[in-house]
Length: 403
Image (cartoon, rainbow, N blue to C red; front, side, top):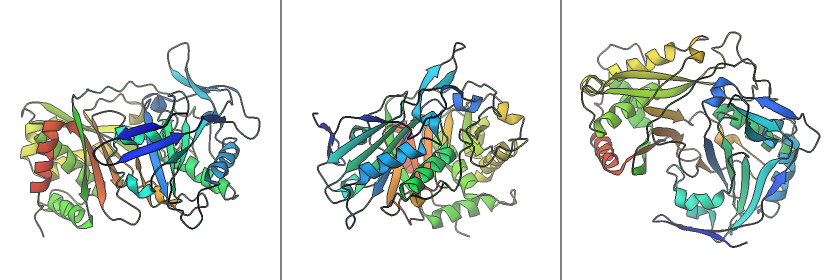
C-alpha cells in the first residue's frame, strides 16, 4: 500500500499503513440492535485520542499482536464496540451488534516518536496519518517508530462512550493485555436513560488552533481573583478556569453588549440520577448544562460573576434536568480528570497523551494535561484566526491580582 504523507509547519510525518483488519470478539457475543440513550444521541461525533509509549528497552516488535489479541478478548465484555452504527426506523442511532469486530490497523513511521512533540494542539494534517477509520466502526491503530516507541490511536463515535466509559474500556483492555481480571466490569444495559434531545451548534469560519498553558500558580491566582470581592464562598479550578475562558473568548470575539453569550459544559450525571447509574455503566453518563447572560454583563462585571453563573449551572443538575434540551455557543470539555496516564498494556504507562485530528466541532474548548507529571493545564481553543490573535493578546495581557 502506498504510504500516506502529511506535512505541516510543525513536523513531517510519513507513515506506512498496512491493510486494516477487523478484530472480532474472541467468543460468541449477543447479536441484534443495541439501544443508545438520549445522551448518546446528543454525542454523535468522532472523538480521537492518541497514546505515546516510549519502549526503547522493551521494543515494539510484538506490540500490535499483543494489543490485537487482548482486544479480541476484551470485546467479549464490550461487545457493542464490535458492531456498527445504524439508524432505527424512527431515525435514531443504534448499534447493530453483528460481532464483525473493531477496525485494527498496523503502521510504521519513518521517524522517532519524539517528532510528535506537543499533542495538546491537534494538527489534523499531520495526525490524520495515524488514523484511517469509518464513522460506523471504532478504530484502533498501532504505529511503530524507529526508536522502539509506538503510538496507540483510538477513534470512536462519542455516542458509544463518554470519557469515563472510554477510560474504563481502555483500562480493561490494558488489564487484559497483562492477563489481569477486569477491575470494573461494564454494565451494558443503557435503558435507564431514555430521554431524547437535539443539540444545536453554530459553525465558525476559518478556525485557528492554539493551546494556552495554565500552570499551578496561574490557576491559583485565578481562583484568588474570583474570591477577592467576597461574593463567593469558594470555587474549584474548573469553575474559575471555565469562567475565565468564557469571559475572555467573549471579549476576543468583540460581541455586542446586548448579545447573549452561552457557555455549555458537561457534568458527570451518574450519581445525580435516581437511582444512580451502576458502577461500570458502559455508555454516556455525562449531562450537558449551560450558563447564559449578556456579553456586556459578562465582560464588565468581575470574574466572580462569571464563576457564579458556572456554579449555578452545576447546581441545576438533578434527575429532572438530565432530560432537558440544551442550547449552547461554547462547549468546554475537560480531560484533566481522566486517567490517561494510568494505562499500562505491558510497556509501562504512556508518557504523552492527547487529542488527535480535528476537534468535534468549532465551538469547542478542551482542558487537558500537557504531559505525564506536568502540573500545567492546557486549554485548546478553536476560533476564527483574527479572534484567535485577540484571544492570545488577552491571555498574555491577563495578570490576576496577587494576594
